[in-house]
Image (cartoon, rainbow, N blue to C red; front, top):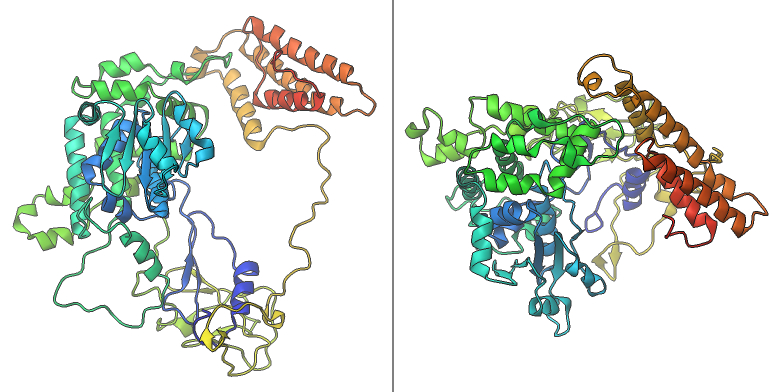
Length: 595
């Protein structure tokens, strides 16, 4: 905006974006903010909650650095099975992007290992942690730099992925390590996964592992520059952009293929709440139903912490992401329609079509069949608000405000207009909200240009008169609510208590079969114990209380907790333990021995 002449000052755009444009709702309509010097409006969209986790990155950079079998081996053979993985590159942004993209391919699982996408030398000791770790290291090419130190002393049982060259280094036998990680992945779903991802890359004109490493970064920069001319065609058909959602759907279908029927082996948690996620899934019975060719990989997967965490989220709470995976799992094994890019080629008439027709065919994704239907976004050709033929036929929510009206290329103030504090919104034909800055109190037919030493540049000083809405005197909100004198349970913890109470008093279903005689009494005792422990931090704040008396109060609380837990009778909830941690901090002495 600052590089071009506009009829709306830059100050007005900034104040409008900060104080008038609302935050979009998850899965709701998009909010379009047209910019007078840009071809396309700024689109603010939040994905629905029941969908793949948001990753606002393109997989172009990942597959420009690594080939498809390498990506599959890293995700399924190392990250999913909780091995140590280290990414290195001389491009700092490439390390960060690849870490996030590789982690996103683990859905429906969440990475439980220590995750440091930008590791510094001050924290390099985490490389010696036992177990899994996933880190990224920027190679500054210094002799005493972190990258050179790690290469010289590769941590035990870890691999180093060189993103600049695509090579993988190990602390032991490189061939045997990569062979074991690749061959443990089931052959049939692994081959289908590699073929489909390679087909998607081919449709996008990408040769995995052989592209320029800055191609994704350059495209991101180009998207922010207003385009005034169309690129030359030269008789060559342009490739479609890489379908990032289809890439993630490929890995989702892989996990659906190997975890079919897992929900039949979930166990109801015991009433004493002392067991972990390991006891909520019958691994041995589930493995007996898996084919021998897939058993080694599935056996290693179900013993990982990411699988136990998934089972715990699946059992304890109503996680919408777990619900999405369960629906995808049922749809995958019940549907006769093939999903994904290869599903087009396996159609009944695939042999009668050319490669160009197959590449242009529409394929169906598994996640789209089960995720919340998002609002349709405008195509590149249709999303330009200024180019719409119906731009003047929209309706406003606030009809009495004539201060903001849309014209062919700018926003003009109407005669005798008065500014309304509530900026009006227009609704286009796709149902998206369109909001533009007000032109009230601006000179008629004025143009605004920002220059330094005769060159277009971002201003070093703003004119406060052009800010509308005006900047408030205090940006921080003042709360008049008196804080509670004692610690309270969070909304999630209260909902969890209600759920456990309903399970204790249930008279039907699987809860009744797993309920013991004293379950309700133990639950009520846990609630009373937690309520008493949550009062301890406030009791320690009494004026004039000596350190010795504070220590007695804390020791009494710890003793009561230990006595009630000794025979697995009554166990406090998470809020009570949080109160004990706060109490130890307010006691003024070291109580690590008692804890």
